Image 1 (cartoon, rainbow, N blue to C red):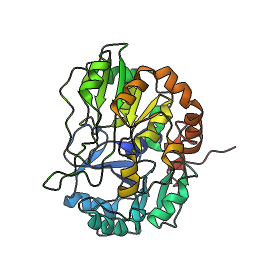
Image 2 (cartoon, one colour):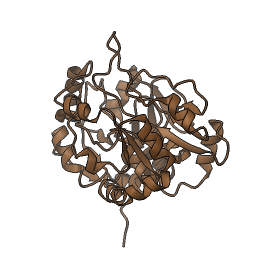
Image 3 (cartoon, rainbow, N blue to C red):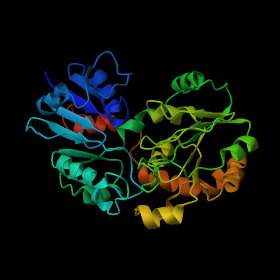
Image 4 (tube, rainbow, N blue to C red):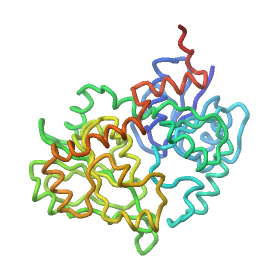
Length: 358
């Protein structure tokens, strides 16, 4: 019986989760195992192995398929029987892989060495769009098969219905009918504490926002790499520990972000997006090269101050109308295959599901 191992930062999330769920219904005979860093939420029908344990390493060389959303940091051995499918963790705006030559964050050089070691084992690389495929190939120096399928993790964002949205909002204590805005920024390579840990200090004035928009609930989602706490203010809910951000996309009505790959994913919902980028010139000049000109790329209104952001949030319909053409171009360009069936296309491409017959 074939076996598959799934790894997504030790949690049950992202594209590996979507692929695992698709296999549960479409190929129930396949045995599935998940790598855990100690969290919960894994379904009862999968085997769970502790990350970096002997069982984890054994499965890395004995499974028939390996699905990940990032490099496997301690993958010292390889086996010809394993077919390694690298899904990556989002569509890139900023330099990734070997393109990230600035390497300003702590541990960047060691991470580059681990990346080089790991990508030599990749058999397939999943791409969300044709425009991203050459970026992935160059950034990872990968000349193997690239599967242009769309992002499996976004399948659940297409025609999701209201059940999960209602459930998540209920769990967060959000009253029915209330406007909800998700705040989901990325991290800054040079934004560190005195002991070298990453933090997130480029934030809007939350007191001003909460005062100006008391009828709105804000979901504060800090990036997993950083130390950040949501401000203790009415209407602001800390969701940094929520297992899968896709649930928050469903729960929210709009999103504020910056240079994060979350922008590409949220666009699948067609909901309004606001960009808060007071450090734009510094970011693209000193921290990360961007693959696209930000001003042309941005699918929503840009703000460099809290007051501008508040104005955009207050005039949401006008902001959406002004950005409609650019938003439509963005979806056509970066989300062309996000139709709810990306997982199936990946699994067919690697032979785990039969091809359609005419």
